[in-house]
Length: 76
Image 1 (tube, rainbow, N blue to C red):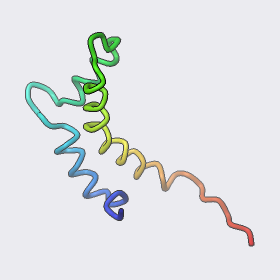
Image 2 (image 1 turned 120 degrees about the horizontal axis):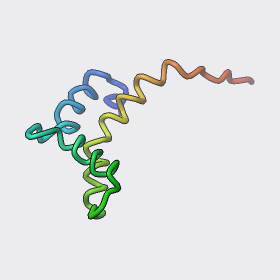
Image 3 (image 1 turned 90 degrees about the horizontal axis):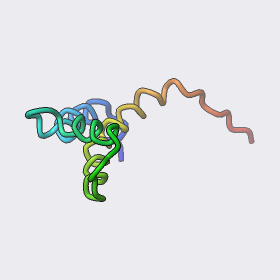
Image 4 (image 1 turned 120 degrees about the vertical axis):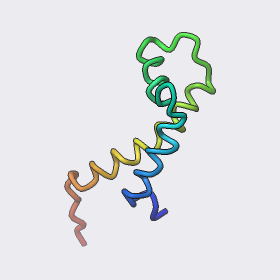
């Protein structure tokens, strides 16, 4: 599970799976616009597709935010 914390691998995932297909617009962008417009006509597969294409971006946000969150001190 080391790859989840590697920003280079997650970056490649964002550029490939996250944005594919690229034409006429990135797939995730079209799905997000569809959801923002009310999601009329979306089926379960469309939401699953949105999750699949959006997951690499969620991993990248996690990598960016983890260093900003203070760590808890463990007391013995």
